[in-house]
Length: 624
Picture 1 (tube, rainbow, N blue to C red):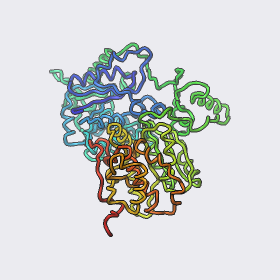
Picture 2 (cartoon, rainbow, N blue to C red):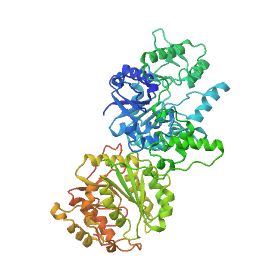
Picture 3 (cartoon, helix red, strand yellow):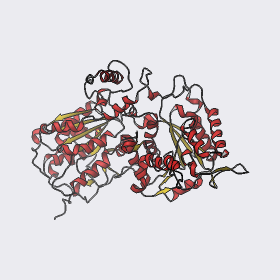
Picture 4 (tube, one colour):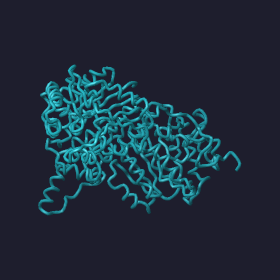
């Protein structure tokens, strides 16, 4: 994936624009790799072979959100949808190893070589273009351009360029997470799609370059301060610089009127504008209906009203009641919205919702994750909930807790977008016994991967919060979890994974647990399976193959063998099982590995290493 990769996101209604963009990029940079991110489904009878060859890759945006796509995309109107996928698409290209990535809106055309701009990525991580480069003069210009830029975003996100380094990856993860949660046209609350977030990017991340060449990202919103001329040799200049790319925003609508307002009698602007309109006509495909967008309608073809999307995005409990918001029929979200609107007009109460938590994973698929979270401190559940909510793959949450915490857990999980169950257990065996008692259920449901977490507070340590956050970020942050599952699918020798620094050498950290751990290991037949493990996962949080935990599940340890909880920090059966998880993996012929703390974009792989020192615990094989 070396070289420069360019991607754009669009629907079929913008296909002609995307084709003009692809043609213009290909003309200037035939060696660049072009990606089309399609936020749509084809019209009936449409043949994608008519255009797909103009791009090197066509990516269905739904593939970036495999577990939540239909429920998530329903929140967005067409512009919101096309911008909301950009962060995940950028991360996808970075994770594939693209060295430099450029995003261009589909209504952009490239007029000259962009090599100078790309060279800025040799010394910078992120390149942005602001809406305005020079102060406006007239009050009307200030209102139209400067104040509007302050309202909708200082930088125009029709263009973005990044280098695949730490700064850009951190930015992309941050951006993708923000867009997943809120990519809306909601300027009253400080949001404008994907764009307004970038106002704070230069403050949050290093390596940002703001490009001030007036030849980049020329558009109706900056024509008041950019003078376009065509030289005798036919070269298009902007304030004396070459026109690199023009952003033909809202052509045939507001863009036309703004262009006329600020171009005045400058015929060169109209020459460029009319050239683009001719190009569009040449790229149009008649079999695409006007204003077509498959996600703009319910299954029966009825247009989805904006009010239905607004209710959906602000009432997360609806996602548990209506597994597919696009469905039509008597028990559908569409029907409920119709009845709700009728009740509103008549002054009646809102219609009742169907049974909650109806969503489920039908037959756990190979990449489905069972997230098992033990909750002893309900006040810490929200951070785990928010991380798992943003995970876009198939996931089911199994919460284990005690009876006195159940109500608080229910409140914290209200509206959680993935399917979930809550199991009530005695306060015995810490997080370990409830996990072991839940494990047979996960195996029966066919999950291949398990994410084990708990609301770790470690009240005996001043840095307990940092300990918990390191583990949660490295394991449950959605892009890290996707990375780990992907690596496990490629590494059949690995059965259990934790962030680097939390995989410890067993011989250095036995504590008071060696004898009981070895008894468990003997019962699992580790010696017959090929030897002892060198490492175990500290903190009892990890991602594992279900197969790696089958040996310890087969022991069916008695709950009575576990000590009641009384704040113990070592020497219990739960502490022995924490180490015995590694023996379980060994009994299955698998190993324990460490992942990079922030793996996505790092270029690193799983590592078979074992730390001999640990920030959060002293070695037990060295006398104090």
